Length: 72
Image (cartoon, rainbow, N blue to C red):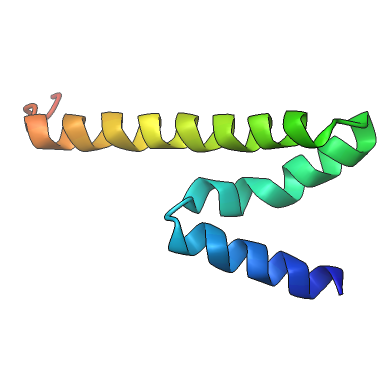
C-alpha cells in the first residue's frame, strides 16, 4: 500500500513540476522518521529543497545565457 501511495505522490509532484521534491523525498522521509519531525516540519524541508534546487537551476541558466568567454 505504501508503494502505491508513493507512486501517486511522485506522479503528482511531477505534474506540478516539483522535480527536486521527487528526488529529495525518499531521503527526507527517512530523516523525518528518524528525527520524529511533524508533518509540517517534513513539508517545510521538502519545499525548502525544491526552492534551493530551483535557485541553483536558475543561476546555471543565467550563467549559460550570459555566454561568458572561456577561461584559458
